[in-house]
Structures are given as structure tokens and as C-alpha cells.
Amino acid sequence: MSRPAIVRIASTEGLAPVLDQPREDRRVSGAPQRQTWTLHEAGPMSAGVWACEVGRWRIVFPADRQEYFHVLQGRVRLHGPDGAVDIGPGEGGVIPPGFEGEFEVLEPVRKHFVLVDLGG
Image 1 (tube, rainbow, N blue to C red):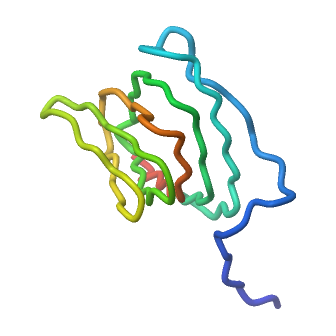
Image 2 (tube, rainbow, N blue to C red; image 1 turned 135 degrees about the vertical axis):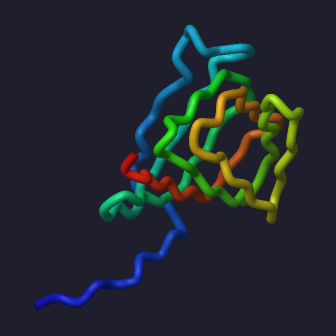
């Protein structure tokens, strides 16, 4: 029987990311390329590294999904019903279940992310 191993979320060197862009109908400004390296998936949780160019788009989180992220470099701004929040290097944030607003990359960003599906 194998034992669970610690997963290190660090370098993505040599790993191919999944590339995409915000859907055209959600874009507010730009058409930024996004790169996602999902380095761990288990049950309702996934974790990895995400990078993106400057741009802004609308986001709608499902009622049963939330994200914690920690910015490594760059700066993002989340626009919500209560105003905007800037998050930069060394800072983290939580996008709560059911959040609707806009995600703006002010400076090219690289972040660690943890997505949790609550199984609603």
C-alpha cells in the first residue's frame, strides 16, 4: 500500500501549461493569454500555478466553488459589488463561492492557486 506524498508547488520549468484566454463575451479589456499548471488534484481540491498577461474580464464563480490564491509577482485587482481590492506580491486572497465581478491583471501576474469544490 503506497503512502500519500507531499506535493511541492514550486518550479514549472519543463512542464507544459494549459493555455487559454477569457471567453470573448466576458472580456472587458484585452485578450490576455493565461497559463495554468495544475500540479495536484485530489477529490474536491486542485492546486498549481497560474500566470496571465494584462487584461480584464468578468468572472462568475459557482455557488459551490472557491479559490485561495497567493500572488508571487505582478498585481491583480478584483472588482466586486463592494468595490475593488488590489492584491500584489506576497499577498493572498480568497474568491468566495458565488462571487460575481471582474478580474483585472494590472501587471503580468504569477500566482499559486488552490481551488476547492464544496460539492453543493
